[in-house]
Picture 1 (cartoon, one colour):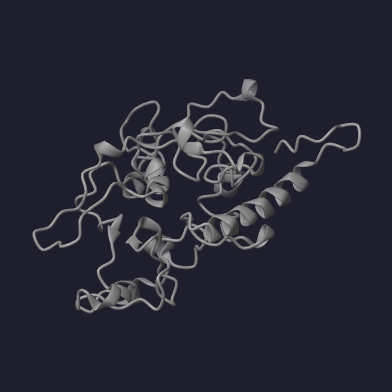
Picture 2: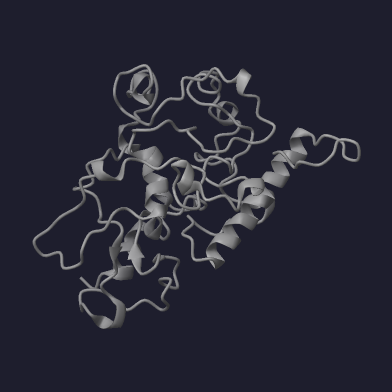
Length: 271
């Protein structure tokens, strides 16, 4: 990261120092955004104990963990900072990323919102909205339309001239810029289950007002607080979002679910 200090008084930071500081800064950003009611995936744990370190969403050192040499430098760019793929770097924390075509509060460019086909049902009472910022963050990778490493701000110490990656998309198509070119279930594991695409009509509705407040709808349970349920299922400005059920900073449960699959639905639904 670029700390913008004079080299006259400060020695350059080593790789281990930068890695540790990036984790700490990510935690600070997460807490600040939570206080400001800006949706975040979860409250990161301070320092290297953050569960995202070493997980599938940690793109630094992914080759070493997978035991391959094919991805880094080819499929995507390893920025050397596991937080920058989602979080704004500390030196840009006050930047309005929306003015640069980004998702509000995040270091990712915003997908084209109008191309999503939302869930619909004749029994659905609540009005579906444009995906909120926290859900757009997830969709910016999982809808398969933008590169995994397509960030607004790169770390200050990143050398653009060293970037030779294809900047591939999480897309199951057999194309040079799509992960599906290799991740087809034969050459490598199948990427298709991780690709949501832009047709969300068969997915759980997102960016929809939760119907259980004040017992408006008896089919839904009353949350313990405005931010959600005591077991960790969260609401964002009263809405159900991707991060209500999935927690990128918690790999304890399958599919990064906030709580176990067998109790997740019963958290909100009475039947």
